[in-house]
Length: 339
Image (tube, rainbow, N blue to C red; front, top):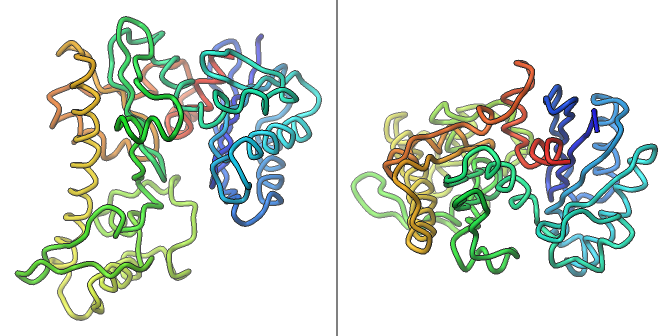
């Protein structure tokens, strides 16, 4: 195939990457939170198709089936596969099913166990073709995948979301959407350990916005309170987590609070990587291959693990203007190249 579009249909984003002759030429991401209804996903498809144009083949993976929009994951797989087939008429479409290969959309629901949330497997499989030994870490807006690649094969010990949560290969913590009380129970504030308020007052996007580390292309979702995406507004949201207002401390104190939350997230991902490494010993020379919105964070994880870092976009052929976006949409990019 000379032109393929890879699609990654998530619970809050639609990501799509176009490859021509094995070279990525365009990558796009649109917010499409399924909790708001399937019409948002349909609208995102329309935007993506307008950006990417016609193609010879479509390759699709999904994680959106886990959304509580659907009564079960199997029903989610069936619904998303049917919707993708309807929206992408005009060229052959295949659903990625991990070790089961490629499936027609009309039979995807019969294989829901290998279709559901298989985007990590697509990405790790592609990495295995470029780095026979690696620790692949994809930190997105919501979750982080931690996948060992050994001797040119995906060496994960889990496959489903439930299995990967148990093995540490899926960390439910991401750069943007993770609420702060999900990553820490307390924070050092004004010389005391302060218990967090268990309300959705702020998320990790606020932390990284305060620290000046939030990539603009990853900040697509509304804030927790619906207010501005400014540093001042993020400070106000951060302050509520300890029952305070932004005026109750100075900028340096709030920055220290933000650093604490960032530190807790880095520790959690590093712990998961060490757990994975304890099962499958990787050569010391094996790099951490980093991808996703959280690439800005993964360099510190690699440093703590004593591994060199290789960016996912260094493993692909891409036009310069699509390179960073392809890393943000790594599973879709992998599908476009594998497909």
